[in-house]
Length: 417
Image 1 (spheres, one colour):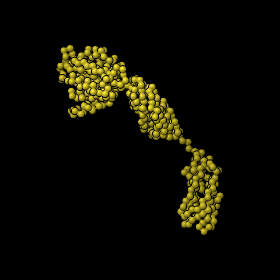
Image 2 (cartoon, helix red, strand yellow):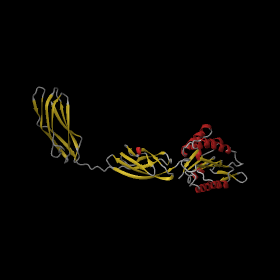
Image 3 (spheres, rainbow, N blue to C red):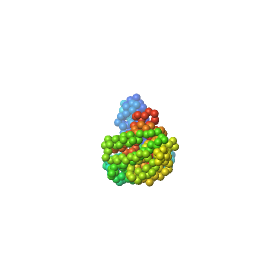
Image 4 (tube, rainbow, N blue to C red):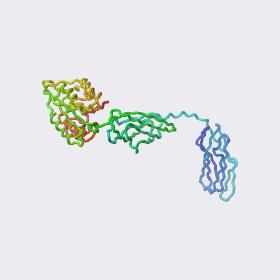
């Protein structure tokens, strides 16, 4: 026998919904010529009118379903009926059901709170790119809102060429609090310390909300030893007071000079050296040359000050504030300072207020380790690496030959303005 049932997933005033008609053969034999005409109440009109269904055959235990889309107009319980519900059994006898009825419950319209538009931020992780060669600008989109971002796009432009194959980045699904990285390949032709990077981000939320945001960030353009007229001057200053442990600064300078000479970009570097450094020698050397790298080699005090030499050759402390003030005056030309002396991290941090890159030592440093660091650092620069990866190479080189120190923790790089 054929049984009819009408079900819903919940009906609400003013909202489109589906009504499902189920026809099921609950008997033990086949039924044929099945007809069912659904009559809906006036309070629940079908969007395309009432429906009639005809099924040629239903085997025992089989079911057939159909869907009618409706839009309820009034809350309450309303009867759905059938004006034509009939079928034939397995021997051909006709059957008609005249009293079919199903109650359909309709709820009041529910005012849902508006879904907030997506919120996000754009963070740039790249602080420096190469000048005159293709490099990458990287960053992340951060979903700072309470709703998911389902899609979006990101565009970048500035005073540089952007790879046309990747000038527009598509964004995927981004739940609240999550991040999605992005990367653009650019070619900057002119150096600068604060080159503008413009980004346009468009994000679409799960409920269709859309927000567009423009942001401007800056990056520095230019690497050491690359595309600067006249090359890179290195000013190597060493102090070895008579009342301190002797260091082999002359051998270190010789090894550094050899490292530069063996590099692919050897012609870009000029090394100047001064020994027996006194305070007046430091100020004079900064007047005599226009270095982009200043290398201080010698001894440091436990409280982070650098020891120069007095007129008699004994140690003379150079005060941290005074050195910071001096290097502030040459910060337009000096890009990197290396303080290759024990306990020099405090001095390096102070200098970084004015100098882009400053390297210091957190603790004691052996003579051999100091040389290993210096040679590896200048090897990397002469190979064309910028300062940060050159620093990492030099730090790793220290660990190759001296197990007494924790090489990864002793040298420290401070990034300045």
